[in-house]
Amino acid sequence: MVVQHNMQAANASRMLNITSNAQSKSTEKLSSGYKINRAADDAAGLSISEKMRKQIRGLDQASTNAQDGVSAVQTAEGALTEVHSMLQRMNELAVQASNGTNSESDRASIQDEINQLTTEIDRVAETTKFNETYLLKGDYGTKTIQIKAHDAGLDGTLTQNTTKATFTVKSLSMGDKVTIGGTEYRIGVYGNTTANQIANAKTILNGGQDFATGSVVKIDGKSFTMVASGKTNVKTSELAIDELDKFIGKGSTVEYNGKEVTLFNEQTTAAAHTGTDTKDATLISQEQAYKLMANELKAASSIGASQVIAAPTTKVGTADMTATNANIITKAAETDKVSFTMTKGTNTVQKDLTFNLHVGSDADMTNKIGVTISDMSSASLGVEGLNVADATGKAATYAIDAIADAVEKVSAQRSSLGAIQNRLEHTIANVDNVVENTNAAESRIRDTDMADEMVNYSKNNILAQAGQAMLAQANQATQGVLSILG
Image 1: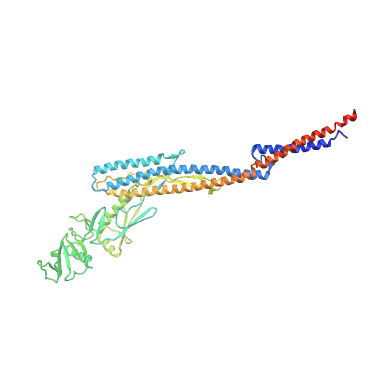
Image 2: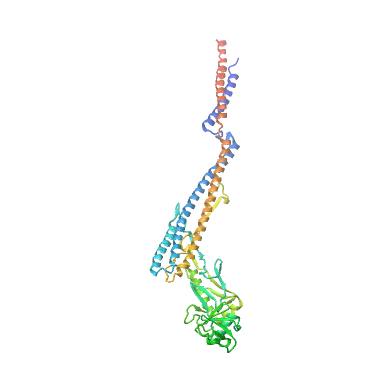
């Protein structure tokens, strides 16, 4: 029996320490809820868990970012809803002002409301903001935009690219009718003598040939049957082919074989013609018709532009239109198309506002969702300085097209914002799903299984009590030495 090395006590003490350490770890796991409280608990598990935590917390913030983006988009889209409403009201007013029953004072009153609505559109664009970011007035810096061209209600085809617009119509011939600016015009028959005018009329009505014997020609509303030379009989309404000049004169209207022409009251050469008949303002030359068309295209396409556009360049076929009526007629015989090309009007507006929503936990640029909102001021929409108060109502009529373009632009912007909002809602749902599943995976790695750990704790608790009892017994065993020494 020895007392220097009580191996039973030493063994019991060692085992008790082991049990106490295990019990301490179980207590820590049970009290914290984590089975990994330090790297020593599970070095690899800790590394994996921390990476998952980084992703989870990053995605949580990404979901918040996306929700903030939805709020910003909804704010902008809500403001544009009111802009849409104002544009619809402006369209009503323009249609009303286009009606010929309105007096100048009526149109002035309509113009007052148009002005107020335009100012309000600018105010909405200037003041709408989210978290101190102005959403509808663009970004720093300016850019130049082109204002759409319009066809002024003319019967033709309008095509346009970024900077140019081309309007194409069928070429006009003597006897044709055309509506320009709401007025119907007739293309008159020119000539420096009555005989020359009649010859030109025959060119249009019968290909340059004499009217056929037995055919019917209506002159100024009265019908005549064509007969051989020298056989004119007024009583029977028979008219000799060689005596047309006795019944057809300046200003006469001649109908033949379903076609109709009217002679100018002014007898001159084509080059010297003024373009408009001296006694009938609706009787014009081809050249004058093209000039009127060009003026209407210019007026209709200048609305909303900061500067009035230049007069369109007019071509008959591929040849530039000259100042002489004769050349126009000659060229019209070569081609059936007349084109008007104009440079589109411009406005200087603010650059588009662009901001990116970061909707992921990584630095990957694919986690960025870009939001672009154009300047929504009246200048950008093409309705700045809209005028509907002219005496004729034509300006109001052309304003309808300009307002339609503005409605289309706001619709496109709202559509874009709506698409982004839908995308963000899907993004939020996906991110939240990833967070939930990653949380579940991280929990399996790091969280304590309370039931299993309680079993370990109970086991270690019993072992600790047993170890304490055995240590006491081992220490008591050496007390027998005292009886020997006594």
